[in-house]
Every structure is written in C-alpha cells, then in structure tokens.
Length: 96
Image (cartoon, rainbow, N blue to C red; front, side):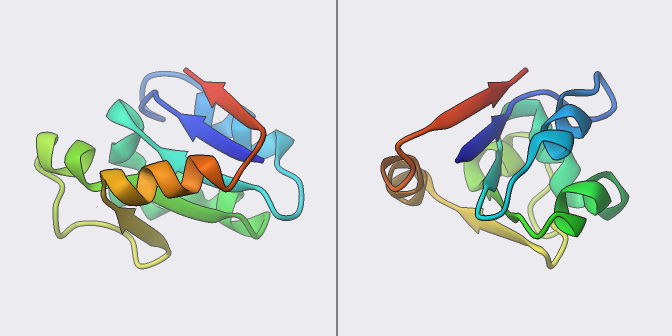
C-alpha cells in the first residue's frame, strides 16, 4: 500500500499515525507540508524502523526551500516518478 502524508509532523500526528499502520511492503510518500519530515530524520524514525521506503516529491521540497537537506534514507522523486509510484500501488491511504 502507498501511504501519502500531506501534513507536517510539527503540525499534527498524521505521520506518526501512518507509521503505526504500516505493514511489510508498504511505502510512504511525503507531499506538501509533510516534505519537511524529509529534512528531519528524527521525524522518520518510526516509519523507517518499520522498513518502509520513503519518498518525497521534489517540487514540494523546492517550494519549502529544503532542497539539499533531505535525509539519506529518503528518495527524492519527480512528478513522473510520482505517477509511476501511484500506478504501482492499487491501494493507497491519505494522511492529512
């Protein structure tokens, strides 16, 4: 399953709640304000401990001035990779 997180971990518990529901093989995509978590490794500890792959949309990083500050455990993707990621997962969950 693809979990799409939209809120900053400094704003609410969406990322933490997502992490609590992860199953083997799940992947997490950080979008919009959740992109700040990509530059805050401590915010991703629980997600990464579950073995989930974590992605962040490059455009959201750029919009928040976070380019070049991304944790090494997070893969930066562009819009075409975003489409490929969503197509590869028949099921998705949104966390706002």
